[in-house]
Length: 207
Ligand SMILES: [Zn+2]
Image (cartoon, rainbow, N blue to C red; front, top):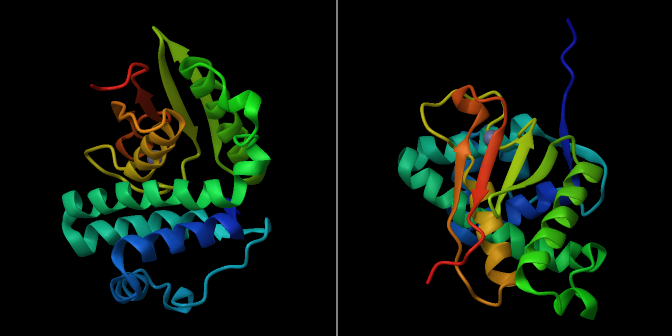
């Protein structure tokens, strides 16, 4: 039986590694890469192109290695911070193509702004990666649903583990709302046997 392999484009793999380096420092990242059998990536990040060559196994392997090295709590906390950094680098590299810099977008009221940006971000993943994202809305809350999630690819866990996505969304909400914090949590996770990974975003910012 042949296994179909799923990938992120090199550019997103590059952003993931840059973000890990920023959060952990190059020395600790090097240790984690060695532990994850990815030594060859140390100081040698993938090019910024859209070839789909950065495998889901590599992504989930790096994140599970964080938990191995720092404990599940510490590792997931780091993953969340890495997710926040990923948004920053992603905005730098993809912000224009997402239309987030356009005045018409900047002037939208908060709710439509979140919806528009959420759809643009989901589109970016659906177009350039093998992961599938759907944005749903219920009772005014947003649900970021990841099918075929690279963050927990092949993992089994008791708890939800895709904290990188939580951090990415938190930081995007912070940026979109000019500095507000939102309640963001993963309510379903494929690693726990759920059909998809689902992140719930409460639409009203926290005080
Ligand atoms: Zn997941």
